[in-house]
Image (cartoon, rainbow, N blue to C red; front, side, top):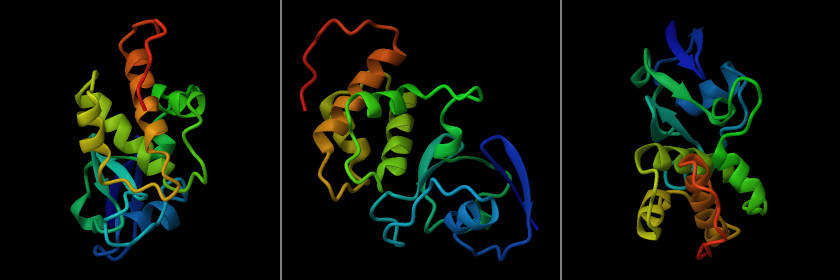
Length: 164
């Protein structure tokens, strides 16, 4: 039995300890927001947080995360259903095109802003470099992160142009 805490909820699961966390999240915990992309930890679609840091769940064995706090895209917003500022910025900036990579993109952006509340373009590019968007919405992703940073820092949008 493996004990996990996913989005604040305890789970006691009877799974092979070498099973990738992604499949435990999707198949055992029933949370389908985390996506399978490449299976080799290169695309970022499977990004979740482990104790607040982004990891690729497709290559992380569940035994390595027992007893640690796992947050998926379903756990990013508030309990009352309010969107996280990154999620709201994604809507406002119309970031998704096909949307498949976006849960991983959002998870990486949330982790970035938790560590760096006012990231530069370079900071954003570095933090997001492990997340591939086949539709190429990178300029919108950058704008979304900047918009979320403004919202999270309590600074009113002064009409400042946010470069793409």
